[in-house]
Image 1 (cartoon, rainbow, N blue to C red):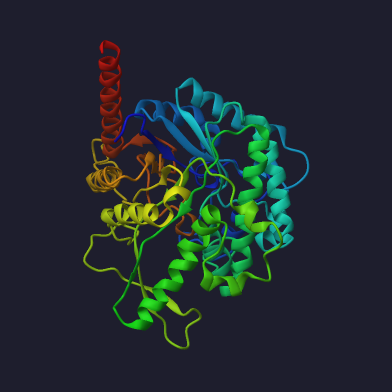
Image 2: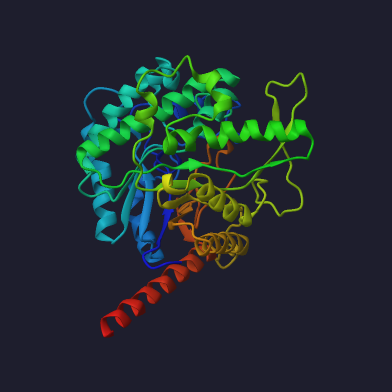
Length: 450
């Protein structure tokens, strides 16, 4: 990796914080969703999660031991504005003050995500992201937290994975708020993108100097050369990838989707979405194989199994080279419009727990991380400007609709006792980070001698 490359790790508020009813925090759509029978695979919730709200100092100490240069975390909107509007909750603001100050004392730079899916339930009651007024509430929230933390936060991300929010939350109903609107969820995508732009404007007005995004991207591979499969793949690629990267970087939607969005686009929206980005964040997990669906299907495409690759415990195929492929494709498509790239999430679920000696030997995670870092290094060699890698995740945590059944952490969490146990992957990643530091130190010393 080049000098100055940032190694970090990532989390999200609802997945780790717990303290769901403490210090004035209001209910979020995930609190409501988890309370509905059958929504979460193990019947759990994030009410306690990793108890990070009370154990943040311990978690910062783990990050310092890791040698992480950056930590990406999200603010719980209902902790700061319990109903999504009105004055801020002082105790909520104070918690993130303590967290940010603790990170800086440990020489860890904060990367703050404003919205990682925990919408205040009161806003959902008024329509959520289907309601254009939510954009205004989000811009107000961005202004509040920007004013409070801008002097100490290095990087900002308005919205995490708007495509996942829209698709799983409003189109298929697999995530909160659980609506199944199919293509009628497209206004949600537009409102999220305008919200991204409005928040970026508010953050810059507060003095932010680095504002980016965190978009989930997957290379799309057709199931066959059949015209129907190729066409279905192009459509899903536009819906999953193009619908978010093109407005942010070019100020337009993919041409095939414009007829579906014309009624919701208001004057000035596309310019608002296309705010200058200081970095383009990519969350990558795996490519998707797409086939045409049958005539009776809800959607004209379907995701089919990608055979021939190992899978994680989540069943996701492990294809590191597809990350290299996507990085090179992105650069080729957007060239000068593409800002420097950060890998804002990348990781894998393996359920390995402590052995009789308390050791968590998760070699599969080490292999996964190493292969993906090598894929990034190859892309950099090919001219792609990648400046950071934030591993998902620091801690095993509440994995949304999968509850506590999937473990993505570098640190094992016993959810009964909250005991943290760094895995072998944690030590491996610490060695990688330390080696990069030594290279930079020797380079600096050589420059001084020269």
